[in-house]
Structures are given as structure tokens and as C-alpha cells.
Image (tube, rainbow over all chains, first blue to last red; front, side):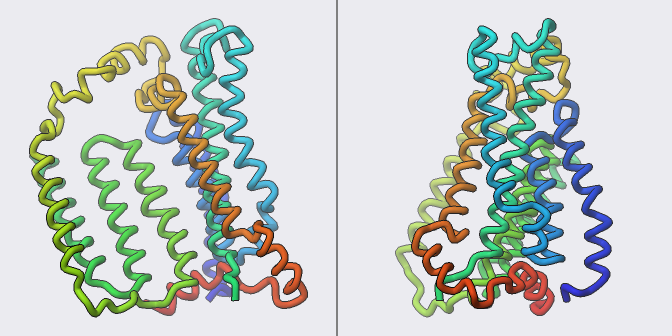
Length: 140
Length: 205
């Protein structure tokens, strides 16, 4: 079943557009529905599709476990770091006001950075969950 | 009026799906029906103009969860264990809690009621102030990432913690698993782990 060329070719064709759509949802969240949570899940879905068609090992070559774990922590660091950055600039934790001169520009910037952090963590966690469940070897 | 009848249709669909989940014994069918349940719930959210929630429900509830359940199904038997005795106390508890929930639902404010407690506290301020101040049309994003930035940070940390927990429990990171892994390293290590999902779902239809 997995050697069926239809699955392989369709998944290869879909892989790029799914990621592009994920990025659209990620960075268009200010203007339409979406944001970091949904975008992370969508981008993870592209990698999960790849791993389902080509096998878990191939998927792990594409996105190694250490990268997944790093990105997982990186997202939280980006989010928390934004708060620390605003404290460094003299405002309260997670107050985006000092990031730019105009308040709406500062809010735009802050929201985009914070959503990126959410997206990174959600993407990596979803992929890690799939890898953990699909690659689990029960104790015999 | 149209919205009302669409809601009636969708909610009855939910009920039908629930009864099918209860009746069905095959786990793969139950997983598929749960995905359908989530998708119907997402449609209800769209009908209520909660597009962001619907998007999340569709992506997480019916997408990723279904895949994760299918991945976990590999370690379970095909059919649910047959229950021979009918526990009367569980039934009584379910009925009592269900009746209480239905009674409580009558005390809820009507759908779309502008005087509902949720709509008179901070929501008017968010709606009135966020666009002139932020120039961002999606008020959900404003609330989520700016007004309630702390909550979202907490949610992100929860997701992160869940991921760490699953990795620790399942990915062979515990000491006993690592020792066992070192013993059986020479034996078959790269089997077709995730391919089985596709195969299983194909065989069952």
C-alpha cells in the first residue's frame, strides 16, 4: 500500500502548498482567522503526511528528533523572551509598547513575534507526539 | 432563521454520531466517527461566527487527534472488549449528571444575548478600543496575543510540557528503555512503524 505511486506523488505535490498555507495562517492571523496554534498544526500535518507515506525513518531524516526538541523549546523561549525584552526596555512583562514609536506598530510587531513562538512550539510538539506514538516500541 | 435550522441539523448530526460511537465496537470506526464529530462541531462554530475556534477545532480536533489515535491504535486490538455485565450504578450516575446539566443549561443566558455576563465585563472595551489602538482587524488575535498575553504564554508552556511528557514516556528516554534498547540494538530496529497506519486503515474498509 505504501509503495503505491499515487500516494507518493500526491504527498510530494501537497507538501509545499501545505507549508505555504501554514505560513499564511501564521502571519495572516492579524487579519483573518488563524494564528500560531492553527499554523503550527497545519505545518506539522505536512511533515506527518510525509512520514505516513514514506515511513517514519524518512520523516525523521527530514526533521530529526533533536531539531524537533530544539524548536519545541525555542518557541517558549521566543515567547518568554519577548516579555523579557520589554522588561529590558523599561515596560512591564509582555507589554509591547516600547518596541516601536507608534503604539499600533509596536503591537503588530509584538503580536507577530509572540504568535511565531506559539507556532514553533505547537508545530514541534505535534510532530513529536506523532513520532512518539507511531515509533513507540512496546516492551515485549 | 436559516442559521437556526442549520444549527438544528448539525446538532442532530452530533447526536447521531454520538449514538453510533456508542454502538460501534470497532475501534478504527470509533476514531473515524470522533473525527467526524469534531468536524461537525467545527461547522457549528462557523455557524456561530466563531471562526477562530472552528479553525482550531477542525485542525486539532478532527485532524491531528484522529491521526494520533490511529497511530496509537496499532497497539490495541481491533475490537473493543465485550462488556457482559451492565453496571447499573454507572448508568444512574450518567443519567443524574445529564439531567443536572440539562437543568443548568436553562439558567444560561440566551445565545447572542447582549446582556450576558460575558458580554458586559471587558469585551465591550476590547471591541471598542482594539481597532483604533492596534489597527488589527481580528479582535480575537488582539485579545489572545496582547490583552491576554499571559494566558497564551501559559497555554504555550502547557503544550510544551505535554510534549516533553510524551517524549519522556514513549520515546525510549527512560533509563530502563535505554538499557533495553542497548541490548536489542543489533536486532531489527527499523521496521515500518508508521506505514502500518495506512495499511490498517486500508484493510479495515
